[in-house]
Image 1 (cartoon, helix red, strand yellow):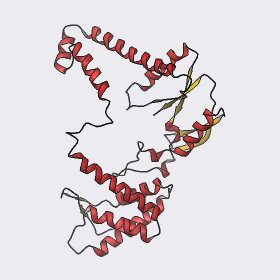
Image 2 (cartoon, rainbow, N blue to C red):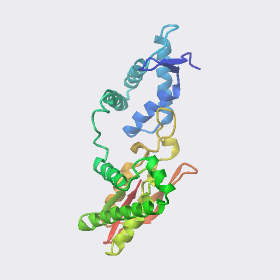
Image 3 (cartoon, one colour):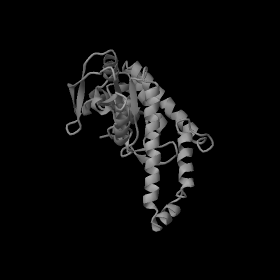
Image 4 (cartoon, rainbow, N blue to C red):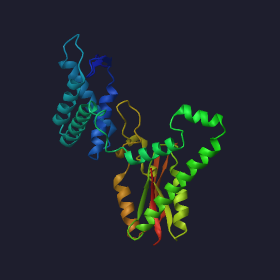
Length: 284
């Protein structure tokens, strides 16, 4: 039981001290360089806490920067230079992100699909449903069927355009990525694209990235101690790359199966091989 009870955040607020966050931070850095020894991370975190207790004057509360400095010190002292480097790089990246937050309102993000947002807003304005009030008014005037029909027509046009873009590059496209949050229509969109491609003799073969998760006991956690299923470090990227390479070179592979109920991966579970007219659909 540590005598440290609280920590000072960067904004000056005082919050409860959570030792597991130190373990998670060390483990995440270890995973970044190929290590997955949770017990070692816990032992190193214990050393960090012990040194913090020894160096923090009675009655004082350590701040985040002091804790992170101590993590770097303990990692280096224990010969974990690569892990320390990954931790330092992660810490530096987080600092850069904090600095950029003040500019976000003035600087548009390169990750936002502005043309698509403009197209969607333009469609909504042209159908006079660009606010909740206008949509409710349209529903009250029995225009819902009209709006849904128009929206579905626009969606099908987008799907057809996507399929045609694939067909235009049929001699070079071997893989299609379908991404998006839960309930965003990934499966429906993929089915419809697949139906369009099938008219020209092509077939989408699904490779579900979720099956490449590491076992739960090797899984990285976020800063709150929850299992992080969004970070690439939770996935066996080496195996994904190897399987894709083998598939594109005409070899059969056996895809793992991840059981979410048990948190375990079953290796070499499902056979998969590409035909000449097959395109890999990577689902995430």
